[in-house]
Length: 427
Ligand SMILES: Cc1cc2nc3c(=O)[nH]c(=O)nc-3n(C[C@H](O)[C@H](O)[C@H](O)COP(=O)(O)OP(=O)(O)OC[C@H]3O[C@@H](n4cnc5c(N)ncnc54)[C@H](O)[C@@H]3O)c2cc1C
Image (cartoon, rainbow, N blue to C red):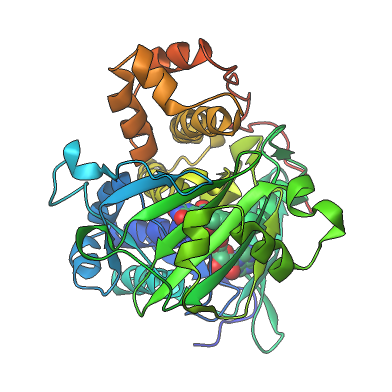
């Protein structure tokens, strides 16, 4: 379909077709709204973020994706395990010791190119218009309000589309937050990640085949080891930039290979098989938008907030925010009122989830902290920690944070996430 120059109108425009954009798009289309999803890349496209935590189940269920996930070849994930630098392993934390085995307790390790394609196809099937290779280059303003976007297509043609609400689901690009100066770095979580894929390396079998392993290296750095289908393993190392680049090492492969020696379990598992030869790096990836919404605009998924990936919460939060924002937009379209104030509950719910996970991440990186010391003193904390790690992030964890504070400082909530009801700077 070739879009007409400047006359197109939709009920909602969605920028970005990652988990946030395609979930919001699917649900709004299901409600019968006219939705346009604009995606810069041609799918399937590569993306990091492959391990799904248990509470991803509910948003996937709401989207009707569970039968498709069950029918997929993604490796089933039942547990997480922690490994010390000298190779000592914790017992596996099996999710089915706490949750229903046939639903929440079984998650998946996905290939994001395939998972995101499935999610986008789902949005299409429910009636969303999707345009790939279409970059949004500008938000169109009418006074204070965003009233549409300017798009450049694959052929370099630029056109405009209008809608009463635009959802920024642009991931780490954080389109609106960057352009409006709303982006805040997390004061503490400034890590670097370097990762690659191994083929035919050592992996567990049976129930533990899809286990996520978090393998520690010195100075609170860690490896992720995420087995995927086709004999591939996603393996990456996360640590302070200063530590990973010590002695002037800047080459990603050299950084990665040096750390292999720092964990004997990783060394053993990567001693057979080989890397695909491609290495990815990312830095400074924890950040927050000061606002969740502004006139004509709402921020969703990573474009709203993104946390250090140590507990694999990103895709769950993106899907959940896509779902919550879609419910808010649907109600607003029905009532004919999409004012920013209507997104206050959405913003608060997402910030609660992000802040709960953020407290856990801060504790994790404190050199003196261990979950075990908390559980030894407060055995009942074990269940709360499992719930938080599994993504039950709307639960009240205030008792747990008081218990944590006896061991390490826990950060206060950041003052972000309310809707902006005042002027939005046009860019
Ligand atoms: C090292 C690392 C490891 C991670 N591991 C995990 C993990 O194991 N589990 C987990 O759940 N999460 C993990 N994450 C987090 C996860 O990747 C993200 O939280 C998740 O992808 C967020 O989804 P999203 O839809 O918000 O954004 P994205 O998935 O990034 O999607 C955004 C989309 O917007 C498109 N886009 C951007 N700008 C424009 C534009 N101007 N116009 C049109 N389209 C645009 C992009 O092409 C992209 O397709 C990890 C992240 C990192 C950095």
